[in-house]
Image 1 (cartoon, rainbow, N blue to C red):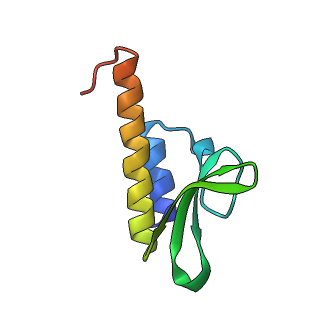
Image 2 (cartoon, one colour):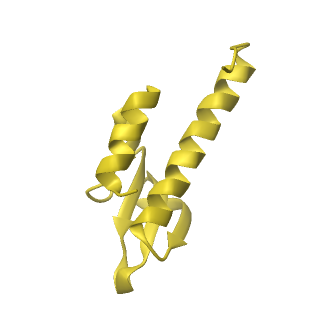
Image 3 (cartoon, rainbow, N blue to C red):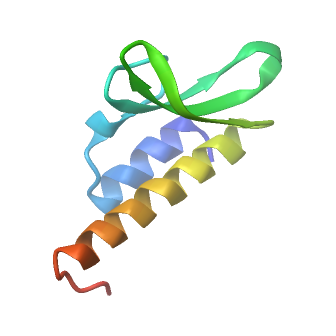
Length: 86
C-alpha cells in the first residue's frame, strides 16, 4: 500500500481525508512522510511537533499501520456510541 492507496482506502471507509496528510507535516492530522535515511514516519501533527511518532522501514508498512489505526479508532468510536459493527 502506498500513500495514494491509503487515501483511497480511507475514502471508501468514510473517514474524512482531512485526518491524514501524505505530502508532509500538517496540523491536527495524521501524517505519513518519508523521513531521513529512507525511513517512513507516521505521527499526529500538533503544535509543530510529531506526536505518537512511529517509524517504519517502508511506505507500505507505514500506510498499513495508519490504516489499521484509523479503522480501529472508527470501530471503537462506533461501539462507544452504541453503533453496530457489521
